[in-house]
Length: 304
Length: 115
Image (tube, one colour):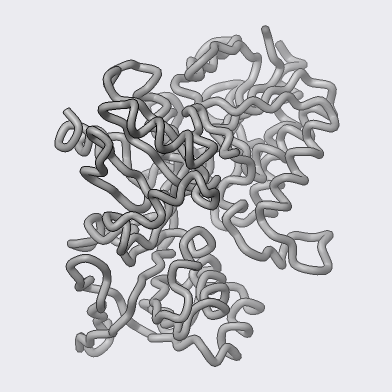
């Protein structure tokens, strides 16, 4: 079966691309490993996506995006892509069960959370160290936790966890937060959270589970121990670009480099969302990328 | 239902008979979350490649009764991250992990505890 557009990855970028592609009457297939929404689906409440006066749950938004894309004719298949042949006019997408052909491919595989890289992190993963507040927050009910980071995810996580935990420390390496003002306002008002400024985590202690962490003030170099039962890591992301390593041009941090049309260095191959090298990684910018990628994929199909 | 590419255990009875009837099995108890999906994916790949054909791979929904044996097991006592992955040999849990694991890590556990 020949498709006009195959989209790899079902986050907001992928579903926006699918919506625009299907509405352009292109034969569109979206392949997603398992669940729709990507990182968005793990966000408790989304307050900055236009059209929702009241905050919407990330998983619910993902379901709506999928249904909307399907309504206009997108075929959605849950299967893992294991290889891509992107050169030439016709691209091949191999999954664990099938092989698909397409005139264009849109890469929207997103990103996953970055680890701290500290000794003991791997051993205590799932025993006090977590990378997903909405996944694991309920295990920390009435306990003390620390969130590491200062961006939107870290502040959102701290606000979310404060509804479950006894005390939430937000450890941030700078003297101001990078998170959006609305999130900052919320955390500054939150009586259950405490921000530890200018500090980085340098050690994790505990045998069977996390018992305490060592934090260093980067301005004074002084170290202190903080007794916590859990650590939530929100220090950025790593792109899911292994599949296209040595196939499309990547940045030093392994994000896919595209032009303004979202096209990679290979004609007919586009990238959108968090996997792309860009300044602002948000649901709305992912959706915008997806729309642009689909628009130019349509142009490419028309030119063949 | 988790809707993965790995066979899913749906009841307590099925769980018990599966564990008793298979010499070596790995069961992953999770949700449809970002830490769980990579583990399901690695298990599906290993099953498909038949690299560990003597080992049965299964998933179970963490919030169902079917997963109670895992949720309440002594070896999972300090676990605070999904998914809980347990390695059974001759009806006994010989190893268990909490949170995301790479395929390489799962293979190391298989080599060390089940083979």
